[in-house]
Image (cartoon, rainbow, N blue to C red):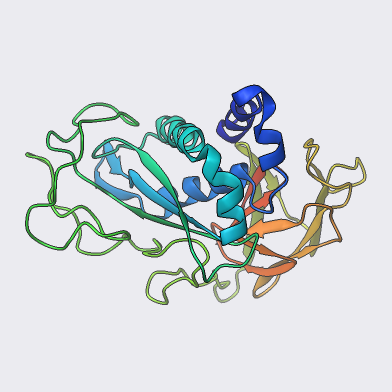
Length: 289
């Protein structure tokens, strides 16, 4: 069972089902969970062959209406989201520099249904040296260097570890979802080499589905090119069109699509783009050859 599905099931049992009314808000907790996973992936920093460090301190900015709906449950929701991040990190063999924390904040510039995620890596006073996905002691104030602000790497590395890079790794995004990606951090779409071609595929729960035609329809129907068994997915939910660039189009689904953290009806895809339909995350891939 996937990490997001486990997270969703745990939420269903909280507070005798009072989360059910929260689910009616336009921002769904499972969407936030997916955005936190992407924030880890996009800000992962490889220290050595056995250690990849990801952020451990997150702020989720919500519109005023969504914040008011979710804030009464912010403590429990924050704990559940932190647990989901811990589970995901264990699955991906990521490491944290300190304890995981998720905070909800109100952002007056956001409309209902939109959100942003910001993250940073906070080193604890005795930074974790153990296996992936672990916790640590309470974070200490950064010592020298750049401030430990959101979007920055930690200002101090644990004893014996390689120095942290001064900028996010290639392909990483210094900002949170809801902002346009920084020009220097976004990988351009793969272009076919001379005389070659570009291969396209998607990955769902670890299973690869090759895109061998110009279009690929995804949905709950058995007639879809790729069937997704998810009650939040419509029979013909969305369609990927390969090209330069490739795009995804919502086909009038009930719950819509989220591409790289943004609700949309149509979006350009790049290698590594994450598409959320219902509670299912789809990774789009393309490569030359």
